[in-house]
Image 1 (spheres, protein in one colour):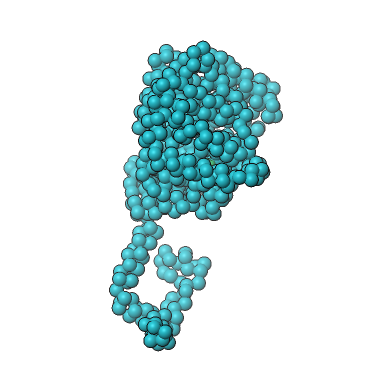
Image 2 (tube, helix red, strand yellow):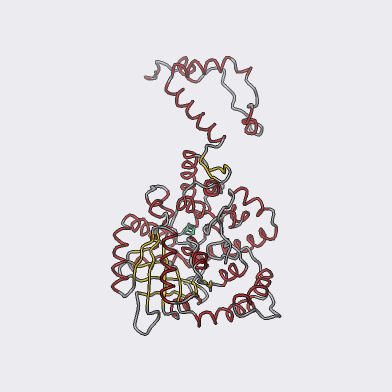
Length: 492
Ligand code: SF4
């Protein structure tokens, strides 16, 4: 079973250990710089990239605005094609639905396609509690699962591992899960891939239940789409007798014409490929071809709350390409685990606090895990203005107060800095509402300006220690205006 993110500390604390880990930083720097350079070349090949990006943004916004209608259309289409649709309000309900469906087949093993939604709800752990073993079949997910690790990247969950570490995990852990790795396994990519292929093949051939997510769902026909690079997904989607797909409600697109846009932008943004090596699509069930039973679990788990937020809802446009992670200077140094969620990096910093709320230390700290440089917005293929949402969520944290731990409880309490900021804003509002008092205060400040300290006292000292305090003029602006301009050219 993979480790979980439950009880993670706030981002700065979690990131502190990561930034001191030179191996981790080296692994991340090498991987993110390689992917980002390839992505830039792949995107530059298309003259109409800005138009595709805008089309993606519009399609997603339109779909989200009419989500209720398209979800009902999808349910009708899937049902008409022989599938069964289940609605899950939260992680617990989704996990219970899936566990019941697996138990109904009499099986105690499932094979899985890489899926962010099932990681988000902790499906593997929930199934294990019911005596069902879930085997990850994506190579990077397999590395994470065997290493009892946590994913640190959306697309490359084991990005924090180098080849030597992966060889060690395969050698020591594979035997406990099935076919062991060869004794003389080296760290060459071809040998590592072959060891994983042989290990997984026996699981594919044995499994009678497959579990997947989906990159897209087409409402007009009830078709689900998974794109991938290794072919493991195609095996999971076609070999088992029962297929269960857990998909977030925002993954819907109205028509195949809409899908065409994302099948161009997603591969170039994620793996820097012109198209994905494997694009699997399925519509309900088909006699003597693929699974005989298909279940679609539509997952909310905080998405309708995010949808209600006029600024934050743009996070639901995300197609999980991970381009924003690969350009983020904070992610590159802090690594994915510090974000305390299966969604790391810039998208995680705006998605997790919306899906989970800001009541925990980690979620209240995530909107601050950014320098607001804007690189994430520049590369996002659906133009999510991540810095705008980060600032918006910071406001929400300040309004509600960040969460702090008191004994075993987490409570919302204004931090000192936030309380001081609020007090200053309240004082400013009062002063501007009383112009006579403001003028008297400005005159007093001008007359006593030689007596003013050069540094602020108390907690303000840290601020003024590196900055010059603004000089108070000898005469307030209003007095100067009155003396020199009043009565001229209609000025008062
Ligand atoms: S926010 Fe944009 S760039 Fe980041 S993963 Fe989502 S779609 Fe990709």
